[in-house]
Length: 257
Image (cartoon, rainbow, N blue to C red; front, side, top):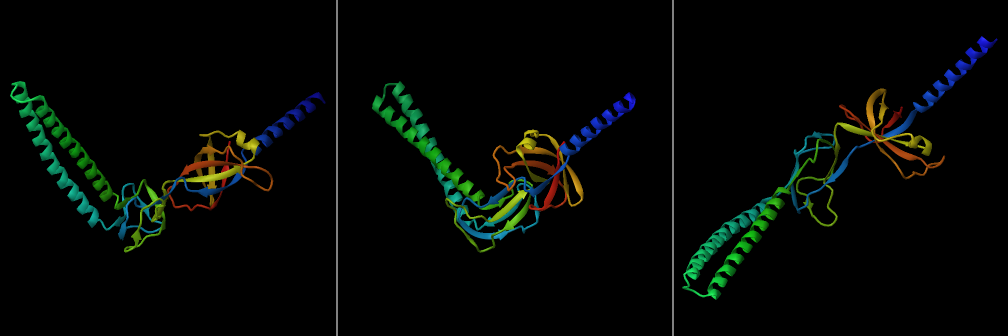
């Protein structure tokens, strides 16, 4: 009897441990999201000259996506470059003049006021050169900004620009393209406070989508609740690498240890 009772006790304990492990490793419903979604626009105004991509296309970091007509910006950059060349000559001449005046002053040939005037002309010439160089940098930056490039390896989600379309840069830039980071997806689950309290950033997790499983890790654990019919839930984001194309909004399952 004692031996049978002991075996029964250990069977109950084993079943309890299995039940707890199964509960902890249970699949949690989730929804796929983009790891990074960015709305792109040009910081300068102009007319769209070309759009090189379509929705669903994969692009590499730095790849040209869209270009504005840049003739006006090219002219401004050339004008600024010419101004800098002229200002460099003026500054060089002012510097040479200051050297001559300083030499004459050292020989007590001219007065202190003449030396001060030469120093002032030299300082003004150098200041104007610095200002001209700043204008050239700004003109070149505006010229570069007429081309919209991929900020990272991405998939194009939305195309909202066509050749001939006018773009007005302002406080609320006009969205021309929407892209999302390629090679990674995010599964967002919602857990109650007790479940979320056992999850830590960096924890390994498994994401199941359409019959396929992916190894991932917990990227974020929400600290503020989301309203739900059965009480407050906390978002838990699991990021995982992918090679094929997946879409945001697709149902998934997350299994946490």
